[in-house]
Length: 515
Image (cartoon, rainbow, N blue to C red; front, side, top):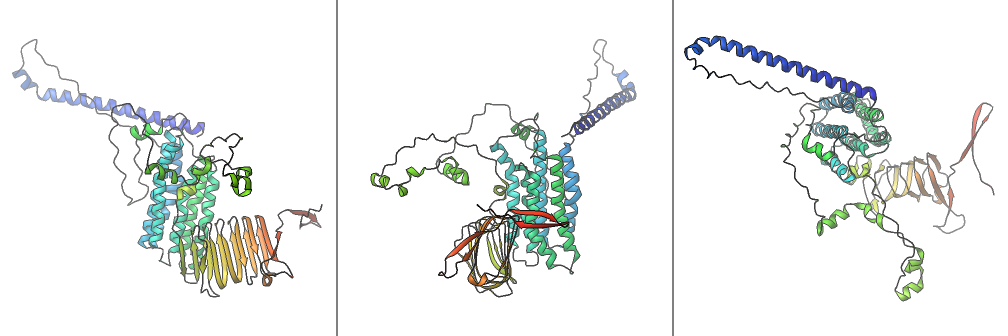
């Protein structure tokens, strides 16, 4: 927060308090004038019943009414309201209500609720010191629950073929609030925007020349993410900003609750404020969980459970040392044990939660989404006009039997695809550690923004054109001439290029290492 913003905020607070003091003096003057008028109207009765001398009673002073001064929103929250909520979200919700079915309106309303929860978190950050990891995770729990509600709304109406891409776009865009856990939040918001374009492009294609309101809806949704990125760059460029001189989160929660703001019409009202804090008492730390609760707590940590384990040296591996297998005794390691590394903050993918898997044929498109650890997912009975779309899969092998029109893989990790033949192209985007094997033919393979991949070609597919952009560690295995099937020679796709200027034009060639 800049010095200028702090000065303006302090000046506004002083002016508000001066107005409250002036209002209080006016109330005191009005009360005194009212008491004088009352004494004049009742003077006759007072003279008839005047008490003896020495016993004259004096009226007790009345307590002036208390003036309540509403606190002003911090500049970062005011900017969030102006840029994101009032600037984009309200118009987006009203546009959705104008032409969309009720189930999409309900999902967009849940999206607005998640932004409301994000606003409450920004209020907390503006008033509190940065909490520890445990307290921060508790603050993120409402956001995670809201994102899961949006995902369930998508699954509940996933069979609505005319609106499934709208539902998927909202479900993929909701985790944009996860920038609060990132050291580079603007880059994270940009990644979320790129991920939902997979679905918004389908909306534009399906309704091109039919209903322009769908294109306007797509622009409004993408505009929310653009404005979110602008807000983050202006107010939280290196992560969520906390108040270094603020109060602890526990005290703010118990003594300074801030009611939720009504962002949009017809949203459910905020919960009532909690009762006043009880008298201070000695707080004893809660006992550590034991029994089944402790076991499940450890399992929920996921990959964090194994971070404390040390790497086993080759000299201690029984499968590489026959002497150890004979003695059944492994000597103690002489190397000092490594200290346990601190736990890193939860990443937004943990905030998103596990998405429900999908494997279905919709029209002429096979949709394979969010499949995990599937050793052999078979797509059979395909036709030449069908497209296979693979999205968000992990550690999965997809086997496509037959000839299809095209294959698309997006945002996958360690996913393998085995396909017979492809008529148009195979597109692979942002899918690290992929593997692709073509047993028939394919004219084009396009790889974009991908690190590490293996491509296996058949003898009939040697005329394929492979295009790569922003890629690294891509290897192509071609069959060896004169050898039996299954014998390949691996060759690397060039990554280093040399560009020179010749006759006013750029000429690029591959850099070859000879030595």
